[in-house]
Length: 147
Image 1: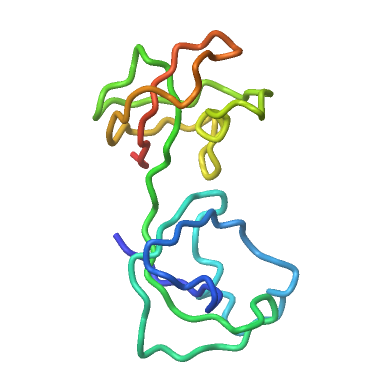
Image 2: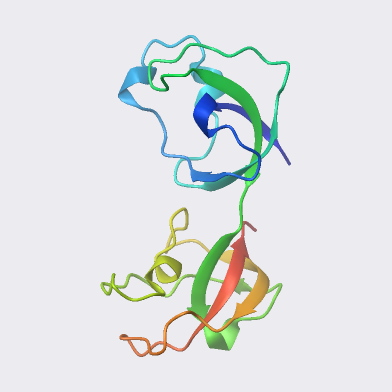
């Protein structure tokens, strides 16, 4: 289900994904707050449409103003325990990983996902990009969606 929100004009592009970070300091006192601050903080979204006839609005945060876009929660590419990696099943992230140099780090600690949340596996993508997990985890790369 799509939600209409406001986003910086320079960022308004169909297919662009972003993680909603919540209110910025410049948002205080803005007349468009309710239209801009209507997403779930920390969740990843994908822009699915741009309201072409909508007015470009002035914004204290975005120098080129903001415009109305349609967004939907995006899936999250993540590494999970291989034993539970089946499309349609539920899974959680394995936990933090300090090995930031690993090619799989962005999938073990994906932006827009929470370690305490259970997700539905949308699809199984296969082997993760690393050759060996430094934490000796047996992992599979999947796409996670909200339940």
